Image (cartoon, rainbow, N blue to C red; front, top):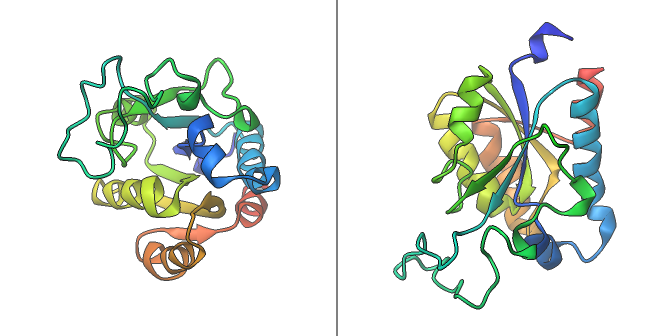
Length: 189
């Protein structure tokens, strides 16, 4: 165990069936996520999976919420639905937590902070779908909570390549170290 990695965790955010199917027609775009998970496990860095899902009957959905109100009772986004399960390309191991959130940020209504505190984690390595969704919202909230942040730029996907570019090149670097999965793995070795 390298002491300086003891307090970091890798967050794999919203890499779940219903979201992957919208963003990743080509399986190769999921390779950086797989490489990151494998490297974290190899270096004993905890991997935490985050997904968005709702209770039966969708009690958490507010009709005023522009992006979530479209998720109706027919859309199959409850905790037990196939769409909310973590994608097989990054299957969690039994000891790896799967955190369920109810809004865009990984912290929104989830037990993420309790898990991080329990493991005295102060550094978050962020990856997820979409760059302009969960990654942006989680990065901003985590920075305000004084976490040290890294973003794995090629383990973030967005429907809009220009939005992805602006965020990873201009916005995220103000609050995080932005690097590729390979560069992150090189630094671990």
